Image 1 (cartoon, helix red, strand yellow):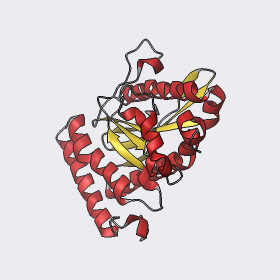
Image 2: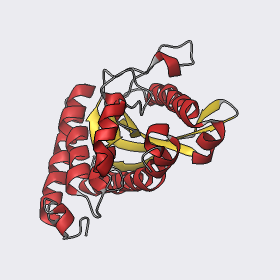
Image 3: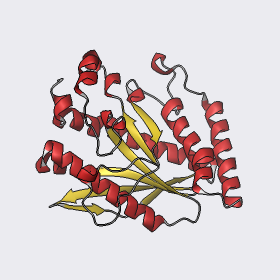
Image 4: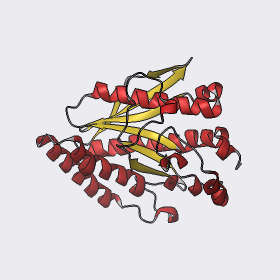
Amino acid sequence: MFCDDTAWHESCLDGEGLVRRAVRITTRATECSRMLSNEDAWSNLVQSPLLDMFVHDMQDSPGQDMLDFLPCTTTSIDPIYHRFPDSASRVDYVLQLFPERDVTISSHGDALLGMRPCFNWTADRLLQQYPLAISIETKRYGGDTVKGEQQLGIWHAAHWEFLISRAGQDAAEDLGILPSVIVNGYTWSLVVSTRRQGTTTILCSMEFGSTGSVTGVFQVLAGMRRLRAWSLNVLWPWYKQHLPELAALR
């Protein structure tokens, strides 16, 4: 099933509960489309409930509570990591990692609090204490997807600049890719960036689900689970190895 019946996540909804939530999300998405609603309505009624369902009701193994979602529409890129003449872009959501929830680090919680770490490329001094995993840019139904991909490209370039500044060019390139998500109304698509020889390249987006149907909602959730697995099994170990503050705790 979508969630295992285990002691580590007693709050996980049963199958019927998940389907009810998926139906509600689809109904609201249809209404937002019919009413030509703006991005705020789509975010509040469709994207946020879906992300909440993914993060809190679809955990299937220990340690997945390390990852949570955060709306961040007003969060800017730190100018140190912005390398373009264009104005710095923002995204709508990020999936953030909570180091203190990692059992291999939790005993060092006081040390983490005392060091005032800088774990990401944003200008938000409070958010900087959390490593970021997946970025999500949303557009209303019929919105400008190309502009959304451009925004993600600028955001990703700053992410790569941050990684290189903290870990070096070779370590950053060994990571290989940075995945993210762009949402256009119903449609959820994967966007991937690479970094080679100082150039950030955005690869073509690939649709992986839609809130236009209950089946599509579960396809979105399945795709997000794959991104969570990458975040916890690939990106987080890379952070622990290469970010100096985390490497010092190993």
